[in-house]
Image (cartoon, rainbow, N blue to C red; front, side):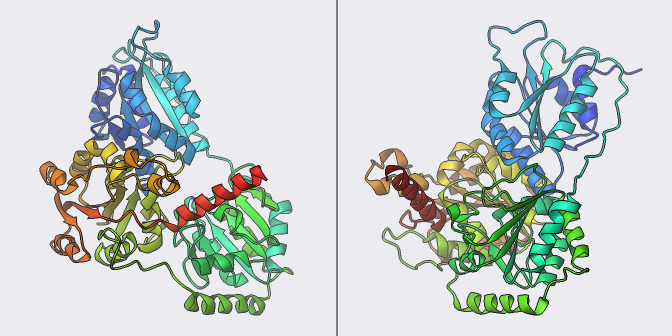
Length: 557
């Protein structure tokens, strides 16, 4: 009989939940990786431990399937902490398998890894010889149920020892609670009586598969619809206003502010979505349906803790009764929206000329949207440029926009996330990574990982030779810009050295190189080093800066 080590048992249980592992090999996880390969798990190597969890995180965001990251103990583990914090903050289930101090006691080079993880909000599950499988299963179920990142720690002295035989319990299905008699009945009555209803869907609605039910509900009510950035186009159709928040148009925001009843489905109502308090009108009644146990914003009037898909279906059935809405009355709301959207301003198209002669990122984004393959999955790092994709690019499905770093306000996770998304992309889609030059330099080592992992990928670098957000926030106040500037890097040359095709984009005409690569089959990785101006401030950042000034004035007053 083949003996199974502790590391092997961990890999064995994980193999029942996932197929992909990302990471860097070290002496703390070498036995785990050996067992994972023998079990047929696909290992995608990255070149910095910071990419291990970021890649697994993006894999989940793109596919909805769990993945694992792995590092050695000590410095390998601490290198992964920023991505671990992002996954916790963004509520992404992901597993970090790492080595740890021996069970007999810490060595001089060991740190308290469990305490560090706890400080980030991640639970640590340390396996033992007797219960390696059960503890691994418990960790994974915790990650999936709580929607969070977990750490599975393998003590160094146990990694290669024989594991005990175990009989593992069958995972129990997650329970779904629906407040049918209370909140849902009230929600149905409010929606049926609304003259100007709005349905705002978030990532929770997408993950619940609630798009069809919410779309049908909107049509029954004659409601306008919108989505957060992570639910783009989920409710596309008649009455769709696009993205809510700072990435949307002022015309659409004005219509959202006039809604008398707003159904918020699976959205947390973050400050960015709420336009820092200005999105929803002061007299609007707000209903929130979410898997959370309590409201996520003070504006919520009626809250229902429920599965969004099930709840929307139940509301539809309730509307078949006495609470049936007046569709003709609500139809006038959609007609008014159509008229105003047609007449109102869209996003600024950008300019042909800029003060420094570099590209306007808005006109660049518009041109890129026309060039990039229609079947695309977009990953974008954090940074000043973060709005250009959801504002100007066609995003086919909610899962085709992976915004990383926004939950933890981090930059530098884009390349690593692109590796995970590239492994998850199916159906011949092209992965598109959007990054700033500062964040790209932080994760530069994993450009090689992306080139190795991607079947078809386009990397768009918004290269303004600066940390753009800081230039606009603090340089505009007269603070020294020297620490905010970056020497202009030839990313195109670096990309070619690593095996990608590339071009420097100084004018829109230079995009012809990218077009030719796409026309030739879009195989491999193409890096577009786009030299943009720092003179254009993104609308979302202006909105944020204004909100900060208003908050300061309120405190001072």
